[in-house]
Length: 353
Image (tube, rainbow, N blue to C red):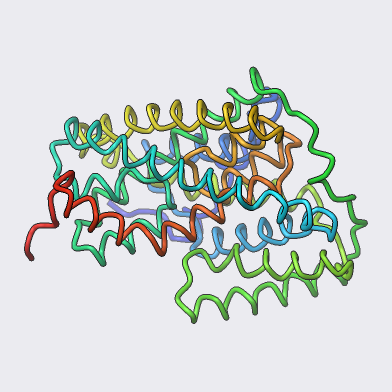
């Protein structure tokens, strides 16, 4: 059997992703372009080969990073720093909720607590895979479980927020919109690319978003951003991210580890419920916008949750602050925390290689 050339496969995959995003946007579904692209690509993968160009996700993250970073004006950054204790507390609470769901996951999946630990804590797919490898945990089940967690959160949180969450007063965390200047935009993209390459060489997880985002944050804080990012580029970035998620949802992927997938889905729902309850309580106690705290504590990936916040008109800088704090704490503390849990005999140590 002769399969189509790679270019044709990529074009057909792109068409399916765009079609899915367009249909979902017509239906006014939250996060339409990302979720629609994800479903369009997944459905196509059930009947024929799919392939998303490797450059799609890095470019999408670069655009998203610049978009997020431009929301950090000087006053917004000052307001965000004022809420730093709450943000750090929320990060610890999210990690604690992930640890609490480890027994649910391991019991249902039939895996050891070492694997379950890195499979359930919401630290990002790439970050948790790297940490699992360092700890001697198998990477494949960790990556699958973390991928399913992101999918579950992307599908649950936007409708939940749209239907029930009060937005609250986000004025202190909202920056004015910038005009679009084509030459300035091209310059931002070029410098953002260089920043991403620099962080990539340093071995930082998710450099394609964090590098441009940090660059735009600095420029925005000093009021020297040369251009805003047009909405069509944000939508295109959502399509790229959604298609990347969708291409993983092949029938082989969905059927090969049904027990593990069931455990990942149900434990992710439990984690969403726990994080949402804590977010509502934290927002009530601090007076922060409930919707922003809910997305900020949601156990999804930073790019996906940032896009969710932007599409719903919720304070993006505050949401990113929550997720960035959790990502940093996961990088530096999950290893020592696991060793402590083993020492307390709450978890079993990693099996010998």
